[in-house]
Image (cartoon, rainbow, N blue to C red):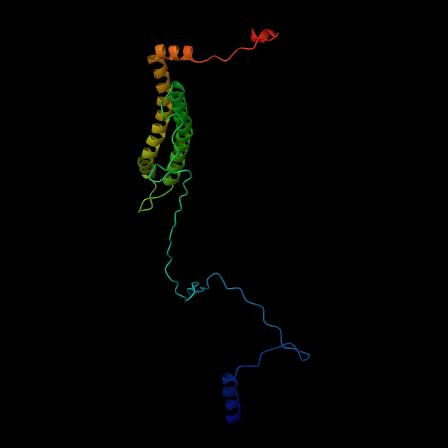
Length: 195
């Protein structure tokens, strides 16, 4: 009875050998992976993807090089507006036309910039993550750029008004100047269009 008891006890301590398929000198095939059941909890630890290397702080430096052509020593480095000598009516007209031509595209560009900036600022939530006041905040910020666009539009408008006011106020003097200028001789040809 001791032998049966001892063999029964020994069989409980030693697990049975695994049931492998007979092999021809090759290693056994791995067992197929079992799918976890729905009730099984899987714990995944946090993985640090950042390397353990400390990077030096980034520093930026900006070098600005300005090339001025034709500038004299101690003089202004920008180009003068055409006609800014104001020596004749043609200078005044060239000046007004130059102001108008420069201000008009700037007014359009600033107005478009204001719209783009406002739409970009609307998408930014406040510190609490709410977008409720974002439209009002965006309008308050971009109203200055809209005023710049309106000022550029006003520059174009007033430069045209400057020329018309000049021609109205100095009409008599302009008539005398235009009579005193040498007229280009008119060519007459046989075409009926030139008559």
